[in-house]
Amino acid sequence: MSLGSAGEKGSNITGDVSKYLIQGYLPTIGIECHVQLATKTKLFSAVDNDAREAEPNSKVSAIDYALPGMLPYLNREAVRLAARAALALNAEVARVSRFDRKHYFYPDLPKGYQISQMYQPTILSGHVDLPDGTTVRINHAHLEEDAGKLTHHGDHSEVDLNRAGTPLIEIVSEPDMHSAAQAKLFAQELWLLMTYAGVTHGDLYHGNMRFDVNVSVSKTDQLGTRSEVKNLNSFKSVERAVEYEIKRQIELLEKGQSIVQETRGWDDAKAKTTSQRSKENAQDYRYMPDPDIPPIILSEPEIKQMQADLPLLPTQYRAEFAALEVDSSVIGAVLSNPAAAQKLHQVLETSTPDIARRIANWFASAIPVDDENLSKFDLPSAANLIKLSDMTAAAQLSSTAAKEVFAAMLKHDTDPAQIAENKNLLQVSDSGEIAKIVAEVLAAPASQKAVADIKSGNDKAIGYLVGQVMKASKGQANPTLAQKLIRSKIG
Image (cartoon, one colour):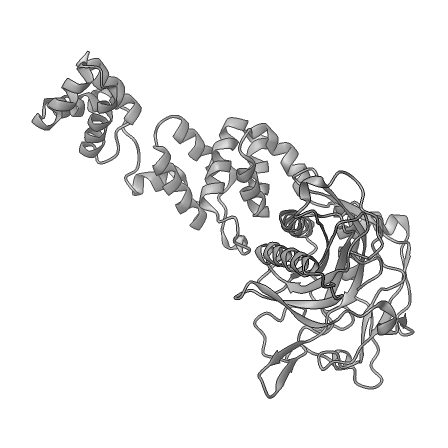
C-alpha cells in the first residue's frame, strides 16, 4: 500500500451514507489506478515503450536488466505527462519531488527494488467529480516504473521484461466510494480524464490502465479491515470484484469471523476473489531515497508550459452537450470515444443544437459504448455530418436510411448524398409520384378491408396501407407524405 493509500484503517467516515448500507454495514472503497504513460521510451532507459506485439524480452536494455554499472536517467516526457495528469485531476504539481527505492525480491524485478515515489510524489492532492455528483478526493499520484510480467505454467514460470521500466503514474484515491456502481463510475471517469488529457493511450486490453480496489465494510464510523483486489483491467471487473468482496466480508462478519488484511486476485471466469498473500505495510518494503536519480525541481513557468494547450476534458464536454437535451446515456456513448466528442464539438461550433442532437444519437447507436478501441473508426468530417443531418431533416432520407449512410461514412468519409444515391436510399418526396402509387395501392383488392376499417374509425389500419406504399416504392417513398395522401384520398 502506498503513501496515504485508499482505505487506511482508522479514517473517519463522514456525510450521509445511509443509502449505501447493506444489512447495516457500510461498504467503503478506495482505488489505486496504475496509468501507463504515452511516452515513446521507458521511464529510465531509451527503449521503446510500446511492447504490445513484441517478442518477449525484445524491448529491454542493460538498465532494465539492472546490469552492474548501469545508471537510470529520467525521461522528461514522463514528467510533462504527469503535470498534465495533475491538471486533469484538479491537483497541484510538487515543486520538488524525489524518487525512492521500494525493495522486494521477485523474478519480474531484476534490480531487487522498484523505483517509485514514497515520500515526495510529483502530483499532490486533488479530486475527481463524478457524473452522479459524487466527489472523490485524490490523495496523491506518483511516478514509478512498472515491473516485468510473469507467466506461470505449473512446474515453471516465464519472465518477460518488456514491461520492466514502463513509466506509470499511480493515482491513489481516498476511500470516498461506498458502492460497486460508484467504483465503476470512478474508474470510467479516470479513464476518460487520462485519455482526453493525452496522458495515456488508454488501451485496457493491453493493461494501459490497471485498477487495485480496496474494500472494507463496517457498522461504525471507523473503516473496517480492508482487502485489496489487484490488477483489474476493465470497468466491469472493478464493479463485479467490489460486489463480491462486499458480500464475502459481510458473510464472514455475520458468522462472527474476522476479516484478514490481504491482497486478493480476481478470477473473472468464476466471478470471485481468491487470497494471494498477506498485505505488506510500508516498512516491509524498506523504502529509501534513490541515490542515482536527482530530485525533480520544477518552476511555475515550467509547469504552466507542460500543462499548456490541454484539450477539453469530459466535464467541459458535458457542460457543452447539455444544450442537446439528450439522455445521459447518449452523452456517455459519445464521450467513450474522444474523437467522437471532438467531432460533435466541431459540429456545435458551426451548426445548431438540433443538428448536433441528431448526430449525437447516431454516434450513440452506431458506436459500442464498451469498445476500448474506438480510435479504429475514421470519423466523418463535421461538414459531411451536418449535410447528412440536413438531408434527414429535409426528408430526403428516412431515419433508418440515415443510420445506414452514417455507418458507411464511418468506414469512408464520403459525401452522404453520394452514398445514399449509390445505395438507392434517397427518399421520394414528389407528391405526384407518390400519389400515383397511393392510387394503385388503394385500388388493390387486398387494401379494401383496411380502407373500410379506416372509414369506420379504426385509424391503425392506415399503417398497413403506408406499408404497401413503401413496398411498392421499394422503401423510397416519404412515409409521412404517403400517409397524408392516403387520408386525403379516403376522405
